[in-house]
Image (tube, rainbow, N blue to C red; front, side):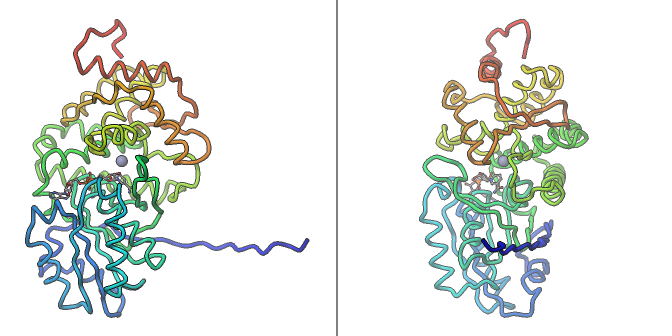
Length: 385
Ligand SMILES: NC(=O)c1ccc[n+]([C@@H]2O[C@H](COP(=O)([O-])OP(=O)(O)OC[C@H]3O[C@@H](n4cnc5c(N)ncnc54)[C@H](O)[C@@H]3O)[C@@H](O)[C@H]2O)c1
Ligand SMILES: [Zn+2]
């Protein structure tokens, strides 16, 4: 036996999350500055969310007009959007084909312009073509600006399993353009609020209090409140990635996935009728009700959390909650996805989360039944939660 060869190296990542209005307006220098950081000919492939393109028919032309003066090549492709594009391979193939045809190399840029689903798909293509092309994310939904677009992950679904395929790949930069939010339907606008409530609950009591106080303005989607919650949530998210000690989730713990074991299962059970944000709101409610049942969280705090989610416009119930055994299968899916020991985040109090490694299925079912009764207004047992 000879001594093994040992390699030990560190890679430092740094990227910025910018906030702007009108990223493709000719007088907005931000994106031009990002793309021109190195003195190289700039080749860009912009992948645009179809739903966004439908709402902004001139967007593709705007992107070309913005990039052309300082680009060697610019090509825009509009891709089918939403969760369905994460379920099939077609969008990915199209992107690989274009990357090859248009001469996009590791020093070129891919711009992903759209909602969280499009960012996940394009992010995976960018991370895997040529083993990694620079990606600039331009998220265009509340949820993607506040949460998914800010992080280091991409993902595609496989045979009903959410994000089964994917990689950890920090972007080159993120540009949150608040102007993009104007064309969002209310339901999609609201979705991101669930992730913000989650961040408040697991790590920032003050943020939760602020969301509670701002609920009326948030419900009316007032631009100032929308921009405030996105910024605060994105900050919480980015700080966790940078300073949480495990950006690429090598351990079994995943605090930012509070409420997500059931949310992911509910999304697939509903065949994606429930959006990610709607499912996360229900997932949070389930884990809050369970936290009470195992004596971790007090009932008043739980009622406060339910009330805030409901004030923001979320329903805390869905017909899929009647398929309890299938839903509980989400626990094992979640464990497999994280690897290692089952690790579920629960709440001790608002702003303080704790990990558990086993779930009492009878109590979890009772928490789910409670949410169903709550929705139907059926009489509750003496202990309300
Ligand atoms: N990678 C991660 O870390 C991470 C984290 C959280 C969520 N996600 C993923 O994000 C996805 C959810 O993202 P989402 O909530 O943005 O939904 P989405 O991407 O499905 O978009 C919702 C709808 O809004 C449309 N749209 C997007 N921008 C628009 C605009 N400005 N105007 C009008 N319509 C617009 C889209 O075409 C789509 O129909 C899920 O697939 C979820 O798994 C990923
Ligand atoms: Zn989420």
